[in-house]
Image (cartoon, rainbow, N blue to C red):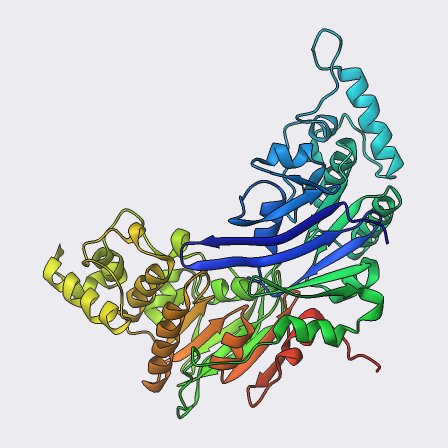
Length: 500
């Protein structure tokens, strides 16, 4: 067997409160595509950042061509022959195509100046060899997303990279553009490159990959040859976990529909979205990256306009044009990006919690700090917030405790529907259990909860029903009565049942 170009062994990486990778291994072979497969949060992106010098591993060894290497910077990774083509291409719109291709390694004249003529000629030769149909002198900003991906591939070829990482490269491409990308992958294989292909789409993986490696919860749980492995076996590797005590789902009496959404559409993100969440129910939304779940929730919350559809809350028609409209109607949204959208960094906990409820904590236009403290203490106490005091700056809290502040803030408005977008993303097990426990309390009190989550155990452990989305559409709505995780993955990824 041909020796691997790149070998990673025993790679571990942790962040405060989160173990991202634990003793993972990966081998990439020349002229072959290895698919890196796993749920959202499995550790794939962290590994890519280790391979490209952005993160330094806490432990483990990286070998290139059999020799141990250290990759302390992105430049050192590039010098070692490793390059990445990301879902969002890292290129510069105001430079020409040729300048983007040779940025950082432009050919020089004998006087040490950039050899513009040679650079343009070599860039054009590379583009022509790919049948890219791109003029090397064009400004990059005149190209579409697909063509920019071609420029990124040309850049990889220009640095003579031996390892090419393709991270969700087809996420924003049309089917025709995807087919063109497949041709380029074959070109890279024939050129002897080792390719790491990261995708949630099983049809793509089985179309172009030779090998696979599966990650789950930051660990490598399986590898092998694609041709020898049915899709169902890979799915089982991805989701092979039991739902345990961190999902204390309570049995509650589910009532009538509270929020009903019919035919909701957006020009670019989603279309014909219909669902209803009932009193005392947790309605889960599951899907892979790009499915459109968060975009739907932001539209329901009035953050983005819709082009079609209608909503009713307790039988009354509503059309929130802003978050303020949604909150007034009784809908609140806890965002995935809590640090950017959920809290005001630089302000204390009590001010963050009381902000949407200033009408309750003020009199005659004057804020009453004692009332702000009282409100904040009531709701953060129910969530077991860990802080030195309510005057502590919210930016100094852990991710889990910041999440509790955001939830407390919205609960203080006494909503009818609360939308939780990835409510336990990046927080430790103990904080997850506290958030889940409180979700159970909310529905027991008659609140309606919509939970967007990429974690299968969380979706299966907490949801009464589950809406599965793919490519901006609702694929199915399932009653969570002994659902198998494989069922959700198949629906979300568009996998057909194996014949055998």
